[in-house]
Image (cartoon, rainbow, N blue to C red; front, top):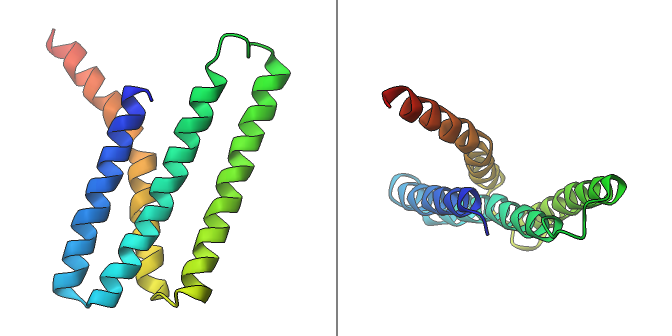
Length: 129
């Protein structure tokens, strides 16, 4: 796994842990369980994407149509897994919807904002040199 993905997984894991602890202390234990489950869905999605990107980085996969098919497949797989895991949380586990979605949004926000933050960090570091 590339270092960006490791950092992303680490940050999402930290958000899951800290958010779960805060929800446990400030709200209720069921809210914390729902938050952690929702954040874990985003974490699983990130791990699936990192795994697929690792598969696509092989040298024999240089054909543009093959790379495009793999990108579509990864996007569809992530979408289906997120829907499935959200449905399991809502229907089977009967988790609190608000807190589960809050956890999912927090995990996804980390997934979206961390690359921007890393790029910003690189620009700042280059300006200091």
